[in-house]
Length: 235
Image (cartoon, rainbow, N blue to C red; front, top):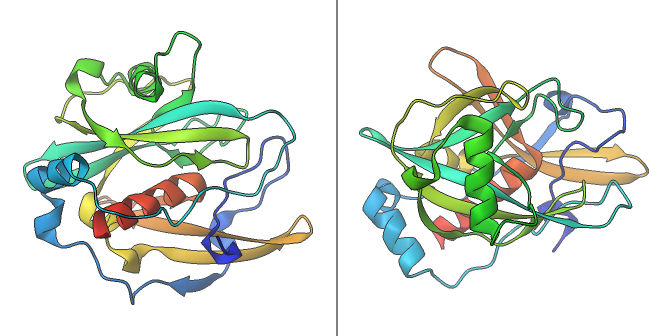
């Protein structure tokens, strides 16, 4: 994997920069968007039931810690809206010691009692936003993504019906949705580059402005996993 394919998330315990201020050096307007017909609930089900031959574009990020790797999982929830599927995301609480304020999927470290990555993702979604496991129709998983903070993360994709959610205020500041069509259009995928900590770093961002005009700045590991989801759906 070339360095231009790599993304990274905010390091733990190290002074940070504002990723919004890092210049954009590219935008993938030359790549095709996934068609509307391929974004329906039925089409997504079929894609996971009969996955195409494909390779993830991003495997992970440069490490920012020497601690041992740990297993983790996130839920990539596709909300079954009448007007089309959306991706449910969270804005992490500013109280958190790492990745505070960032856009993320519900998810976290695997507990010893978790049977597998699906169990971890569903448990974490329940704990973080009150998404009941019985309401999630798991379709499958995307390849493991290794974060700079030493987690091997399995993204678990599931269909979920619209439902009231109760974010855990200690972990989640807000829950919001982004149209799947926005995510699956690479014209919305921006590339950033920065020379930092003695080496050049690169990552994607996917800034989304919601109907109220608020910017949801998706970047780092979350953007990397969504980029892989685009590649899976476009294959």
